[in-house]
Image (tube, rainbow, N blue to C red; front, side):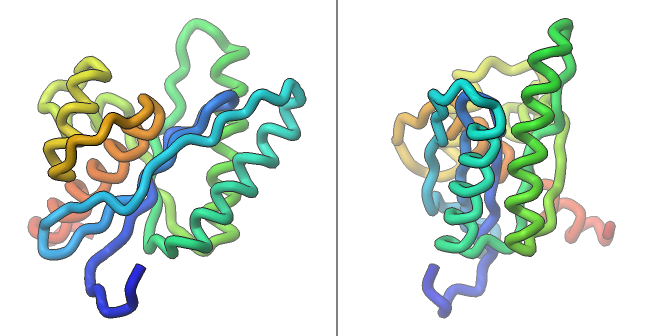
Length: 169
């Protein structure tokens, strides 16, 4: 990011044990723009190796783009406890990378992210992806995990702007 910019770069994260999405959004004077987005795909069977990759790759992204803040979804606990545990571990690896990188991390419920972008807390992923492109004024086709990560970053910026305008901390 060029030093002359006065806006804010936020890293959105959608951690997963097999595929983790990330997206960086720049905001200045209420205008949003895409910095970059992508996924970290892991084919390794060893969980420790996968968590190490999440940590290392997110650490490199944080170092390269120097975001000011990060945001990620809270873990959704469904009927499958094993899946929730793996997701929690991936989230922990991402949180550790952010902490080592000096970032504060805001957490949002998935329904809050969807409602912030689409206006409906139970929106379909395709609706979220469409609104991500609208908010960023781009026509890119993102992987689902990257689109979700961008949605979290946009939600965070919306919530941050709302708190600031409302005089809330």
